[in-house]
Length: 164
Image 1 (tube, rainbow, N blue to C red):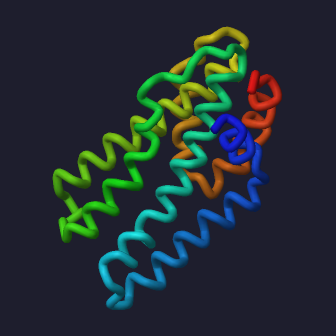
Image 2: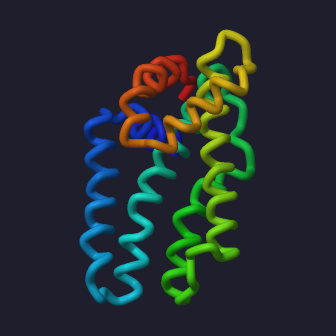
């Protein structure tokens, strides 16, 4: 798993951008059709899953940058944001202004914060980065189409320090 995370985190921004854009384009194309629920669910999940895979990869590479400490037991949380909309679409639940949407956004932004915090802490000379740097990194990771380009040098630097 560590090698997969390292490869995804160090992937060229053009590849990651193409992956994000392809998922979003497929989502837009199918939004105007009467596709069956499993297809709509899968297409809804693709951009979210691609982003969460990138977040997880950055988290794992950043956590192993300065030590070989074991991964926290809650790293499965990075897989939850893509699963929530998939289950919602397959079950026919409404995602606009619903409790399901609230749960999705809470989990999604929690995962995003953990990835940003790990990256900034690994890049900082001390083990504690400022909340402002973490917030900026979180916003850049949220806006992945731009953030992947801006954060790439930092991710490569941290991956170079990685013990995996």
